[in-house]
Length: 433
Image (cartoon, rainbow, N blue to C red; front, side, top):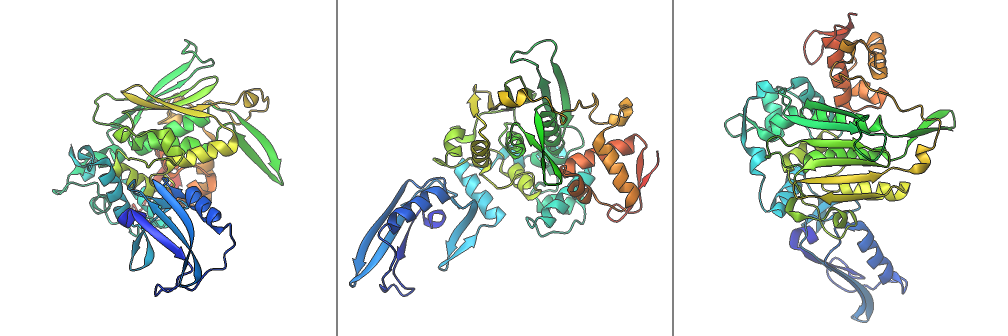
């Protein structure tokens, strides 16, 4: 009701015809209802009231709320009201809410990029469409790149690739990220700094892997399984990495993303300030709704499984950090936005940090540098057992993102270790080296 008309009232003790039938709820029911509304609806409505009353000699309870900070979610899901029933919002409808909230549909996202569908990484697009279909977020079977891109809203009216499509899937490496690791809290000369270029999906995988390989893990045995526990929740890191690409200002030529691991912190920076001047910490606390700068990019990342829920990533991060005791903060200098996780000194003292590894200098082709990677070995082993195994199946077995698996397979193919035979959609892999 909040999403449809910005206000609504629920009456306990009334039948469908509007006649009082009474309620036998306990005296404290009003307080329970008020607490439930405040804890489950996000963002918090601007006003919420619960009152006991009487109609036709029967007890009723009225719960009313008002707010125009749409879209509102209940228990993490978005609904609207129609014909007296709750209707789950379709992705397109939810996107319209965020576009209206931002005051405009992103002109940059929809503008033609100067490239065509033939300039995208089709294998990456196929993998993402399969993930979207298997997760139930898009009912679609891949036909060709133009049809899939149009279904995702990434083509202009005349069939050209939009900026959003080029940055998400382009083969021309349109995004630049800077990865840094320092042994202290200062940017010392003995730190590791490097630049990576790719499309958004490749950069998400790269940045996420970079951070995980430079923080501390400790191990414990749970039953017969060995469990690795990170000092910062992995899901929280992933959400903030994804958010950095969803809320970035790509219009600034030469803009660079930074992912920095220091002795006591992990910082994730993207060009541009929060859309609409929104306060991320107020959003995370549920006091205000989220504004999405790049709605098209956000929609595609959600459909393909890179984001758990539209418009609530920071709130999920706040919950994860609270559960794990991880401190965090955010800041903006007018040109960029930075989210900071505080590392845990107790973890830094652990001696059995056997999870941390050093990645090859050339992440795009580990074998070309004469080094091997454990994921490469897992992929080769799985291909030996089943040449028809797909990228999503390998991702499920290895527990790694599909785009990471895809990037490693492509590096193996470039190095002459594997090759693809047969048709694109139903072919198979062969070990060649």
